[in-house]
Structure formats: C-alpha cells, structure tokens
Length: 481
Image (cartoon, rainbow, N blue to C red):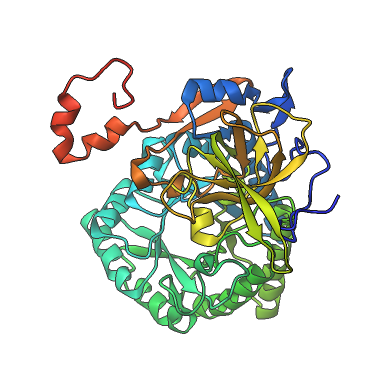
C-alpha cells in the first residue's frame, strides 16, 4: 500500500506494525506473552509501568555494557594495528548515574565529565579519579579545585585564560595536573547546527592558529601542569567518518610542530558517533569508523615522520542511546484534518502521552526524529500514521513527529520510544511542573531503580512559599504526598 500523504519521504508504511527494527532497540527487546507485549531485559512493559509508573526511562544494562565492551575492543584493536594504544572515555553528559558510571568503569572505560556535578557522580560511584576527565568551556574555580583535589587524570583546558587558573589550583593542592588543550579545528561536522562544536564561530576550544602559543604557556607551568596533548570534538550525532578524518589530519599537523618543544604523548579525537533513531538512519559501524580514523592517523604520522600518539575517544550516545527505551501511557487521541498542497486533505492522528518535552527535549531542540511502537500488546489492526504529542502547553511539544501505530491504539495503552538512553534524562526539566521520571535498569528478568523519579512534593519542597502546604495534612493516597 502507498504511504500516508502526510508521512515524510523517509518513513515507509510498515508491513508489520508490531515489528521492532533491531537497529533501534536494545538487543534484548522482543514481544512475548499471550498479548505480544514488549519485553526489555526480560521484563514486560506492563510490569515496569505498574511498578514504577510512566513516563519511565528503561535502560538495558547488559546491552549498555556490551556496547561499551565492543567500542573498547574495537579501539584497542585499531590502535594495536598501527602500533599505538587507545583509551575510551564514556561521555557522561549523554546520561550519567552512579550505576552507569560503575558499569562503564567495570567494562574498562574511563569517565568523561563536563561539570562539577557530573564529576561528583563519578566520584560517588567509586571510579578511580585517575580514570576521570573534566571538560567545560566555563569551569569555575570551585570546579577546578574539586577536580585537582580529587586527582582527576586529565583536565581539558578550553581557553587560554584557563591555563593559569588550572596551574593555580594545582599549586594550591601541591599537585602536577595533567591537561589536554581543546582545539577548535574548524571542521564542519555533518550534524545539526547546535550539535556542531568545531565551527569557527562558537564557544568551544582554542583556534588552531593559537595552539602553539597556548601550549608554550602550559609548558611554562612545568612545576604544576603536564601537557598530554590536543583534544578535538567536532560535534554530536555524526553518521559519517569524513569530519573525524579531516579533524585528525589538521590536529596532527599542529601536533608534529609541538613535538619540537617537548613530549606530546596523546591525541584525543573526541566522540559524537551517531546512532539510528529511525529505521532509515544508517550510521557507520563504530569498528569501521575507528579503523578509518586510525588508518588516517597512521598515514598522516608517516607523512610527517612522527610517532603515532596514544589515542583517546569519548563516545557516550553510541553506548547508552540504543540501550534506552521510554515508556508512556496513551491519553487523548485526536484526528486532525490537514489540507494537502496538491489539493484535498488527509487525517493526522495525534496520540497524546503523559510526558513530552520535559523528558525528551531533543525533538523541540533539534527537530530530532524518533520511532514508536505499541508496548502493552500487539495488534492486527491496520497501520495508522500518528504523531506522538506530549502534554505540555507548547505546540512544539512533539515526542515522535511521524510513525505508524495500529489503528486501534486507545487510551490506557502503553507505547515505547526506542533510542532514548542518551540526552533524554540528562536534558529533562520540570516544565509545567511535571516531575522528572524514574530511571530503571533491566537485566535478566529483573528490574531495579537506579534514579528515583520525582514527585510533586519534591518540587514543592524547593518552593520556599510552599512549606505550609507541605506540612498540612493530606488525604491518604494524595498525589502530592
């Protein structure tokens, strides 16, 4: 049958509206039981919703760990092939909790943090400080003190004026602090404008033309700073290798010149490896991407007649993103007649759920596309084009712009949105005073809470004027309790 006239060109009408595209879901995701409901990590969607409520973030622990292992192994193999070593940092900004930090450390990854709060989580998880890095374009003196005092393995310097501040913190604590220098390579990554972080006119890093002078200034603090090498991060959700290869080529040219003034043992090529959010997305396999990156590094080093440096990368989304699923409960369903440019009209079905942009800001921020499937049951009804809308007072509060659900979807059904492990909880908010959802880890038929969900009472406790309301007696079972 033909696709719906309101469907985007990339969205095909499914032959089986119950099918789960494997590239979008955790490896354990399947349909089971008499009703054909979604299971993740061996746990049924209805059980999760009944125990923890909805919206609910669900993370497949085994899937996340397996992705971390594969990336680490692929990096180590690619590096060994060209005669160097590699270290993978898990980028905590994608999603960080003490449990996730412990999983990543157990799988051999270091932890990359981007604030004092993220650093505190990694330390609370018991991660060896020497395996933690700290980023940030505007690190406070308190955050620098926190990092140096803890003994983090590397601070990524983001501006020339930060050099003296890191050196001062190291002096105060009697340490020699290892540092990298973030470089704005000028490479334009193929991604959303807000996700491209190496264009010339933006807040991150030091321009290539200023690197040698900045490194000289770092080396002037020989008693307090140890220079590890250059750092690059060209953006996020990048599906092709070209930008990484060009960035590595540009950085190695500077790296070679820096060797004349002292050791430059490492090169950090950052992260940003993309994932599939809809079935038409085709990200490059991580192993292939890393092979191409290391081949380029080795070739450029041969041309420059320099040793291949130790390589670091910082994947986050590609590890935790596909391991996550968000469950919602369906509420209001509304059919809207839409005029077509070519004449006539078509019906778009709006399916509203009990969350929205407060638990997934990416569609509103970046126009990000997601998929959706009925989770509480399977259905033999015909596919119906739907738009999954949130419950916020914004017309842009859309969770899934376009996908197909069974035509018999109704109030009370559960739906699931895959690939939500990254940049959903970490970007969540309390817009319209919605409480942020819980995060649950599933593994081998068991579920455990790893981040508690908020209640309205939690929100009121932060409101100084609500003290009396909190202290007043409330009926048993009140949702404010």
